[in-house]
Amino acid sequence: MSSLEGYRGEIRELLELAGVDIGDEIELIVNGERYRGILISRYELAEPGYIVIKLSNGYNIGIRVKGRVEVKKLSGVGKPIFKPPARPRHITGLPKVVVIGTGGTIASRIDYRTGGVRPVLTADDLLSIIPELSTIADLDATILFSVFSEDMTPTDWSSIAIKVDEYIKKGVEGVVIAHGTDTMGYSAAALSFALQKPPIPLVFVGAQRSSDRPSSDSAINLMAAVKVAGHAPFAEVCVAMHYWHSDDVIAIHRGTRVRKQHTSSRDAFKSINCEPIAFYRDGEIQINRGDLNPRGSGEYIFNPKFSDKAMLLKFYPGMSPDIIEAIWSRGYRGFIIEGTGLGHVARKLIPILEKIIKDGVFVGMTSQCYYGRINMRVYSTGRDLLKIGVTPLDDMLPETAYVKLSWALAQSTDVDEVRRMMLTNMAGEIGERSRPSEAKTI
Image (tube, rainbow, N blue to C red; front, top):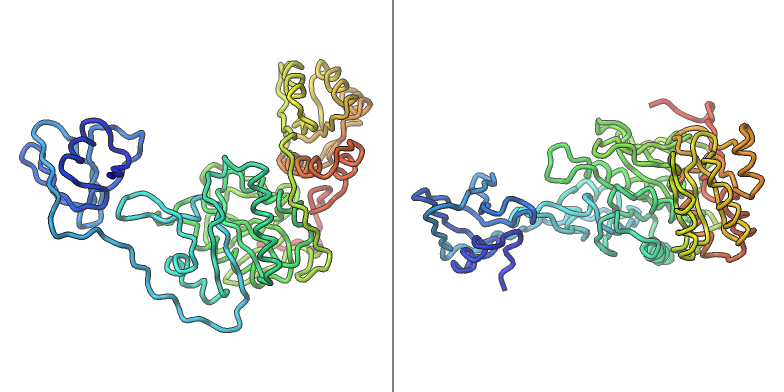
């Protein structure tokens, strides 16, 4: 059966009639003009009246199909096949590191036969793209699943945590999780609570730009992640991404304190209300804090359960109490509110919040401000929210608070116990303050 991805209508019929498929070398004659190249797939939403081929010089061109058109499949020409180079020589004594693929730009490479991308997380694939990895760790790789990060759910967080725990029990010395960048902060926070004080580093890594682009950040990010996973003296759930536009420094962010701040820049990820816990520079790890969980910690706690009854709600001017009531009526057991400033919402929301709190629903307050911390005792609105039982969550990021609440609700149905867990600093998510004597300058 023909795939002909991205082709439809009359053009698809024309290609099927000629017996060609993606990856075949064809000759296309349009109004007497001849074109020769490899037929490649197209984006589904692209203008339909074109056939796209890859020329022998490597460039792709789109040819408008109009008038007299003939398509010929060139006989005797086999489809091009990607043949990775030989695996680099094994170096004994390197730490065992496994890369788990969950999707995202970093977990794919361009397929020059089709023009699309495909998952590439086998060890041989990774080493063929980044042979330097063979000098950093004894590498293994597996694909757990391949999804867009915006499609991640609490169930997926549990699946990642369970898979990571399996490798911890097998004795690997570090785990790297390749992940789409858009919700990587959520997943990093999730593993921070599901696998507390792990014995080895667990490093999330992504890429803002795909590996086929000259400005791709995927290779250096992955090298840094593997280095940290295999060699760092600390064992934290963290995120390895560019510190700034240049390739010379990669920041290692704590999993509960990081947020994506830019849609496309290579230095999109920033630690909020604290500095990165470490940096990767010139192939070495530079520690930036003195309060990190040590490698080999014997305090490991594994609890991968998450609830789907937590809600993250951003307050906005004019917000109706009906919204909260409608969500509550669907069985949600906990709300994280992104309030304004020091932790406020409109006074008209107070009655419905009081109603759901009396019904045993947890309500936690965070701030829409990126920096600073909640203080609900300054203004009367904040004090009234405290009186009805809203819990201030200090400087916890709203996304982290939502993930933590999802985890806490899966541990207990008692709202007082949930509140206790939310106010307990489990993975550096609460009360970060600068430590000038410890922080280093890059």
